[in-house]
Length: 372
Ligand code: SF4
Image (cartoon, rainbow, N blue to C red):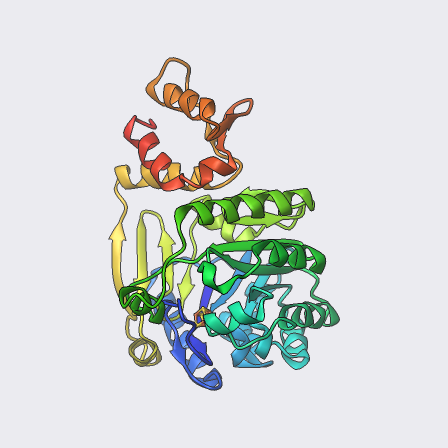
């Protein structure tokens, strides 16, 4: 299950997520809306929820803005009996400025056992430029707070591809991340979305997007530094110490069903994908009055399922089944291997770091030659 927390204290320069800006999160309103939506989903049979969840991911937004009681309240909405699997992976996202010891203790007591920390950088100038509310000391302090509450399983988010005028040292940020000794790291390449403050700045030529060469160099450097430090590059944007791969995200990559609650959240019950109203105000009014907060849905046909299977498979280091010799997909894979974009294992084929830079194009090419 994914649960979206929509509140942020300020909107970051580049952010186009489903976020509403508030000084503090509206915990009561959030809980009422989620309870309304879950009641509707169960009543209408829109999703058959497991008796015991395998993974629960609370993302945002800034869930830590909801305070120490938030995860207890969420457990009450979901039903504590559904959160008793000893293997349950319960992740909550946190930003350093609002992840206090009280929040960490409250969450840990509720059952949260994994924190995804929005660090992004350790460079004070870059953090200010992004509009982040924490300083360079925020991420290490937050990691210590998580550990103090008994949560050692911490993932750190880092952003790359920032404009060169910031003179941010990506290498330094990577080494400072390694020094934190956390078991998981996620990378985000800066993208410039039209509706954001950054999008406007680029249109008005006050900012210049990073060029492809620098983007590529930083991605390759991350792979080099993090794998040398013992992390496995197990998905295009994710690195983990053995046994700490994100089980929640793996459900997306394996094409398994999931229920998403909250504004803008997506759900997938094959072959139907549906997503909720994006604006918090609109969503919460519908959900609280037990009306359908769905915005749209699509039914994946066989062609869409095939393309998605290829794209999701190529995202991870598990790759795809090796195509039979003599077929068009096999020739394509041979070409990729020759160009250093893929490697063949016994019965699998997966992309190299260079190949991951071209993931979308390669997935479309593979699908086009007939993935079978
Ligand atoms: S903290 Fe995250 S969700 Fe909130 S505005 Fe910044 S990028 Fe967006």
